[in-house]
Image 1 (tube, rainbow, N blue to C red):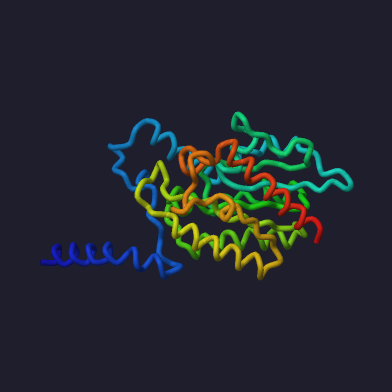
Image 2 (image 1 turned 180 degrees about the vertical axis):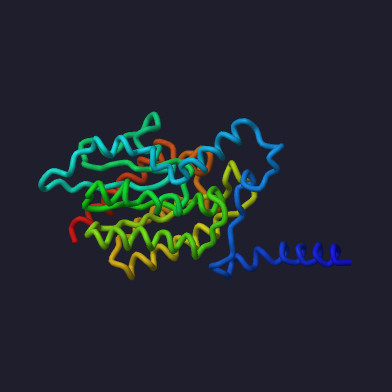
Length: 261
């Protein structure tokens, strides 16, 4: 009987979870199954990935050498750090894209990262570079469960902490909306579109209340399903050159607004 009771309680919780998630900032998103899979089921690549995460979870080593060789901003230079995940990381590094040639912009994106990982490297990859502004694009990998348990409240707190750190160092803050996504190709069935819209509503509200600039990529890119058309993102998540071409002028206008304050 105890085992049956436990099973019934677990089933009831599972059935209630979608309703709870829609209302509760503390309800966790589903996590990457890699974290809970039996060790015997892991491939060599899975084990290598987990070992890398354990050795350097925030991936501080990724830009350590680049940062050491990056000169301080020149007098009058308005450096801007683009800080994010793979959507930022690929910008200018993917064939067919360019990253604002001639502009003092620094790309500090790392593929797959969550807001928690980004917060841990914020000093090294943003504050220490002495930018005039930082453009933060983050949150989609939290919703996808890439970094383990994350709740809406945790995502918000991490974004808020990054913004507060920047403001404390007199760095202008640009908070970008999360790009539309109707399904993650590596985590099918999460139905993220509504979660993305909810997070973006919070980002917009927080930006307005905290002297930050809100950069709305979502409104310029979303289709009727709350996702991205193949022209803008072949896999539904990562922008194509056409996707970046649509994002670039929006980023430039947000940067101009931030630096004119």
